[in-house]
Each structure stands twice: as structure tokens, then as C-alpha cells.
Image 1 (tube, helix red, strand yellow):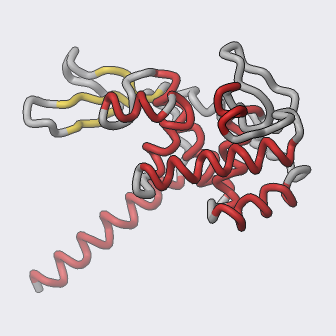
Image 2 (cartoon, one colour):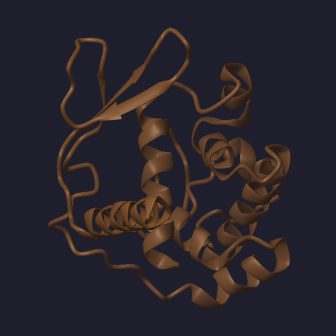
Length: 194
């Protein structure tokens, strides 16, 4: 009888968790790391030690999620050549440039995958605004980061955004809001595209 109660309880917990995860929830998430290094998350902080981790409007839930298929042939080619997931490459492009091949960031990053000029030179890209060159170069660069961080996707994404030297310096995702938001954003898009 005790075994049945435990099994029923676990099933109920699983069912409620699955139902909760399926519902759209838009509340700030707070994070706190205690003196033992344990990370606590909540949507209702009970102490001033909690800091905002994700804002409720971070992913702009009212805006429809639209991803271009215009460059799918190039993305497939890069995915096959460098063994990087097709939806992951699309998620990076969506986060970086919203599929604008002429995009230029305030920091000077260029094209679909927002390659920095130093990386354009390193990767021997002649025209960073050429979609094929940009996708092939950006995917190659990202694959190098995946290898560098032993396949740890969050670290590779952080390295793509902030530079691998920053990931190495902080021995993890750097404490920059932009980088932390970028990692969450790409992972969110990736889950939606899978």
C-alpha cells in the first residue's frame, strides 16, 4: 500500500509539473546563491539577497515567433559540414540578426551571425555580408567553441557572445546581463525550433 501511495504521489507530482510547464507563465524569476553555493530560484523572493534572473517580458511573448527559411540550404550545408545542429544554427542567427544579412551591431559585428571583424579575418571571410560565407564562417567558429568547452552548449554560446577569453576568465558564463540574456534567448529559440 505504501508503494502504491509513493507511486501515485510521484505520478501526481510529475503530472502537475508537466501541466505547469505547459502553461504560459509570465513572472519575474529571482536567483540567490547561498553560502554553500546552492542556487535557489523563486518567483516570490523572501529576502533582499534574491536578484532578478529573468524578467517576465524577456521573450516578448506577445510578439509572434517567426523565423526565415530563406537561408535553410546554407544552414543545412554548414550543419552537415561542421556537425552543428540545424535548429541551433537557426536559433543563433535569429538571436544575432533576426535573419538580416546586412546587420551591423553597435560593437561592429557583421552579417547574419554577427561576426566581429577580427573573426572575419581569422576565418578568412572575404565578404561578411554574403549569407553563405557568414553562415559557414560563423558555424565553423561556433563549432570550435563547442569543442573548446567539451560540448557544453551554454559555455559555447557565452563564448560566441562575449568572447572565449571572457568565459575562460570567469570559468563559466560571464556575469554580464547581455551575455546571460543572450544564452537564455538562443536556448529558448533552439527549443522552439527543435
